[in-house]
Image 1 (cartoon, rainbow, N blue to C red):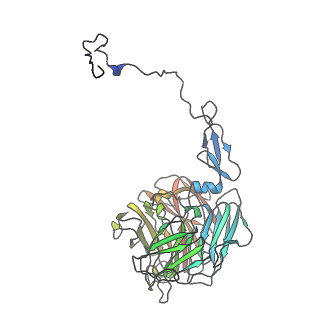
Image 2 (cartoon, rainbow, N blue to C red):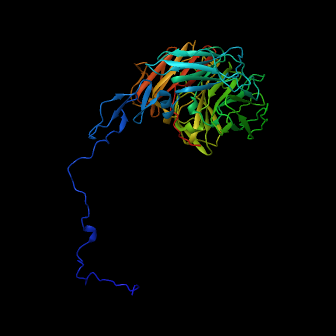
Image 3 (cartoon, helix red, strand yellow):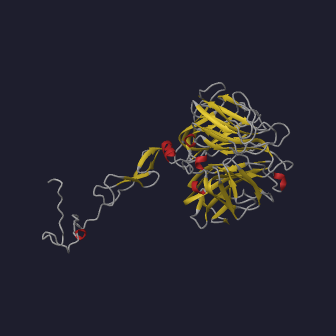
Length: 512
């Protein structure tokens, strides 16, 4: 009967040994041959360093001698890549293509400058500046390519008309610089150490995204020298949405918005969107940008007194904005190198809802709970550590000179999170300033840091970090260490200053 089941009692079945546990039976067919597994798989590759690779030998016992990558290539995960591709595989502030725009500045008659620095210590860079004429979306070379020697710099002049204190979309009128090997790039508005100068570290094209929060500051003249932001389209068919942090003026295809209202703006590659506040002395900081394709964004103020009038003088403020993807949760709030008896002014911006930010030592108003786009402003005399439970960004505002500083004037600059520190930097100062500093930030007791092969000394302690305000000369510089560290650049001269990060990684910490 196929449905009949027979059970066997192991205690009575003569074929079953009740004292044997099947789990104790040795079923392992492997035997110990006494031969160790190979150290590596034959033929596989690793990077010996940034310029050389090694191949696992045929018997798998070790990697062979380092082999050089081809000329103008570097090593990444065992393979050699052209240096521009390598810069995209390991995203940071170096790159081979950068957008730039003339910024709305009180001194409109003065040109802006785009300064590039060759980050290689051995290779020359072939660099071409392009300009897109107004009412065009086709770029054309401006002159012949220039050769920038290893570790050298070159200053391009940008002298087209700036967008003057209005909301509009302009077709063309933008710049782009391209190189055959990686560069660093900076925008100075206006050129050199003119009164009302500020400057930005430019982000390479490959690091741009569609997600930003604007940092700015109120303009302080009775005439309309406004707080504003500028965006450049990098791809055709872009839709940029912005939610106004304060009431903004309309112009062209862009509607006027009340605080908290949103608008979509269509952009093609090389189009420029400029948005200004609608009321004098107001500030569009906290404006949220969400674009469906990457855009270049800068927050700015045409001329601002910090912390406000009647503390003089006013100065142009600008920063090429860090995308939200790169914001972190820990920062060293190192105050700018001391000039005199000034205060240090900060805002901390939240990159998401319900972000709590705290400081150590405690600062005024902390801990603070912020939603996306909100910010907390405070002043202090000391340096400290920022920590948070979500993405946030501190921005430092250098005080006007006539409140005890004695030199310099307002500048604003974003802090890099400690998560984005590098172990090597190439950076370039502004021109014609009396004082330049590389502010070095390293973990307390961390590896030595060298700037131009000179050991950095003179640190002071901030929590678990150390800060050194290291005086440097005008021009290009290299900083390196066996561990990750941060670099900020600051320069002073009477009635003006500049400040920007010396560089940073662009790892995605905060996916959007």
